[in-house]
Image (cartoon, rainbow, N blue to C red; front, top):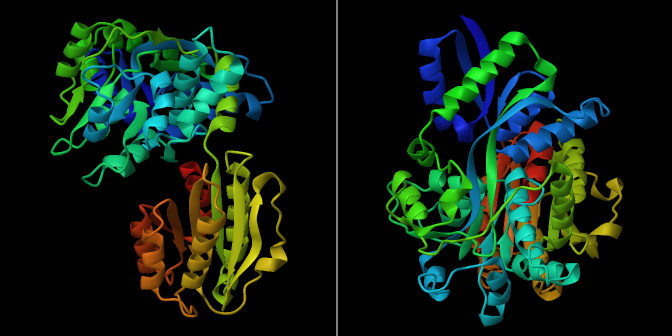
Length: 495
């Protein structure tokens, strides 16, 4: 039999496996699936390594086309010879029980417009993926389309409403999975509301969890994201075209209840009536802790054209909440080894380029025998530093640097901004005048400040970084020298 290789996102594995098992039994093709994180599927497609593509969603296909067009200097006006929508996953509100009770979800539906007004009644926290990432783009599109659909709202009013929602975000993230893991994954809710695709919520929720949560469809506009199978235009071969058609026919025979187990709706009609919502919920096999809000009859929104989606995504970058961030850079002598300094400088530059908002501000603190503010809290667009200011020398006063950053953010941090300390070190704390317990106490007294730490190299003091992260609901990660730039870029998606 003719072998046909498929690049499939991990999220779609449960959808694809039973289909190709059935088709392989029948012939005449033997389908071989290769499962990757969605970003790797996109890279493989841009590298033209596969003909049949099954990324997480249509938004991933848009990203493939954008990157392929850039790589080939516009050669591909249309990257896909064939496409077939398998199902839909709406962008939903996922509420903690406490927040569900507060907003009275049983008696009153939750809408984007209502969410934009709730901050007047008291603080609450939202989490969703960064607008620069594919999952965050889905949230941004859902949000902006819902506000745009109100013809009585001019653009300025719409932008203000979006910002009023974003002001409640206390952390972003690289994708739905990570946002959900950090929001509810350790056994308790750390946010009031997560905005994500419904399939992500269903797949991420632990089967044995004693937690509970409520899924609600935004009443003023629920965007259903298509999950799409595609045949690459650069891979036009008669056998592959026929194999693609065979695969599409195989998916067409999948029953709605089988799709529901993977968190997908067969069509958008299942979002519009209480009976359809109840039936979908019963078919998902989700954990008992998840329940669906009783309201339905929502207005479903259609994914806009690729060009329109790009425009909205660009706008989302200006409405995402800004950050005041103190960058702590290890300039101790050990940074002279094995190219660490060069890689770390490259990482800082990537981090600065990726900060999302022009209203963000950056402070740079150097760690040597003493902690020194090299650049005070400064607007991101005009932030500059000289590489020579960070040349390695001396010991490692990490704790003093964190103390200094905490004081700056508490005293000078903007009320409207996320406040974050991002610390990078390759060695042991050996020069601070402040104690770890003093700094931990100061951080706990200022819960709006979060610490995100990167430890690279075998000598890095990971224990201290983890203590600082735990005290602030932050994050501590480890890396070797070759991964520093990638980790900086990943950390930039959290704010």
